[in-house]
Image (cartoon, rainbow, N blue to C red; front, side):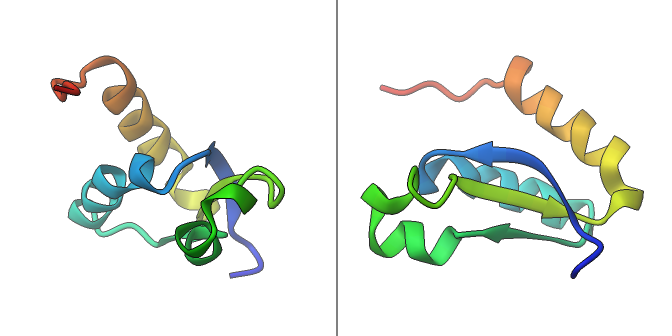
Length: 79
């Protein structure tokens, strides 16, 4: 996991839930640094530098595309 790189940083634990499912669908190797600590103590998220999405460098293009899709083609609405 030392070769994994950070591609995105999130402030809140709820922001990563749908992304996890999307990355799993593509069978990509990833992990979220600080995810557990942020779920126990959300106020520490900023102090820890946020929740960092770490991926293998070979998956950079695929993950970047997924992040772009989720940013612009998101049909989810907060009610």
